[in-house]
Image 1: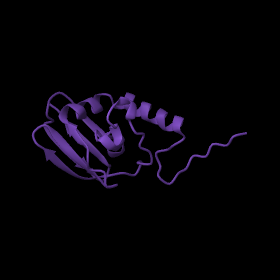
Image 2: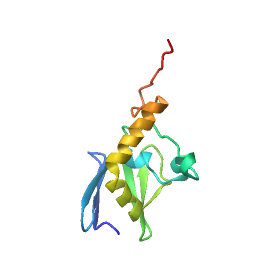
Image 3: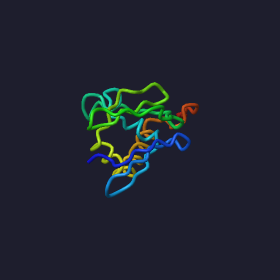
Length: 124
C-alpha cells in the first residue's frame, strides 16, 4: 500500500508517512539503522550489522524508486537502501518494538547512539 503523502521534515529530522488509514512519523536515525541495504541487513538474518552513532543523522533527499519504493539519501553518505512501501509500513507499525530491540542490541554491544560517545567497560 503506497502512502498518500510523504513529507520530509528536515528540522525535526523525520519522515512523515500518511496512508489512507494511518499516519506515522519515523525518525531519520531509526530509518538509517533499519535500512534495508545489504550494508545493514547483510545477506541474511544472522548477518545483520549493528549500526551505532547515528543519533545526529539527517535525511538529505528522497527519490522515488519506481512505483514501489523510496530511496532515502542520508547525510552520512548512506544511500543504498530501497525502502519498499511495505517495508516502510512494517517499520512504522513496529516502531516501538524495533526501537527497543535496537537499544538493547546497542547496550549489549557496549555501543551508543551518539557518535562522539565511547563506552568503556572496566573489568574489576
